[in-house]
Image (cartoon, rainbow, N blue to C red; front, top):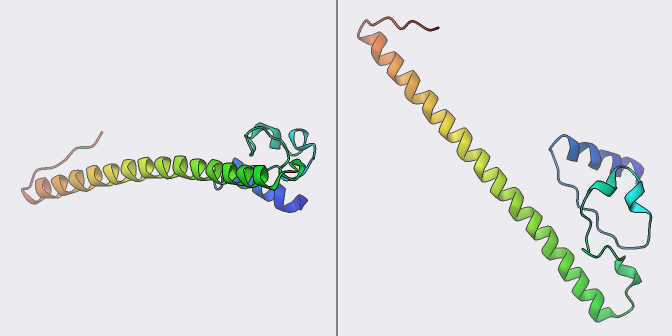
Amino acid sequence: MLTELQTALQRHRDGQATLIPIIVRRCDWREHFDIGQFKALPKDTHPIKSIESSTIREEIYYQVAQGIKSVAQELIIKIDIEVERIAAKASEDAIKCHREKEEQARGIQIVRK
């Protein structure tokens, strides 16, 4: 488990993953492996297994699922914005390249600074 957690933390730091701690049973999660910097689920950070009522426990699992869904939606928005930025840059570059080729075809020398 240590290796898995360390790998997950490194992937999060590298921007390759998003880490969401889910507190299932009682542990001292805030002080280990830099995991305390993350927003854990469930939001009240009470361990899911410490809840005796199965009805309430099911509601907590639902809240955890909603929290994961919310993070996923935020990631999708960030990815969409990045894709749009990259596409706009590629389009600008293509237009610039096309214009340069047209000017070269007309015999106009382009001087770059």
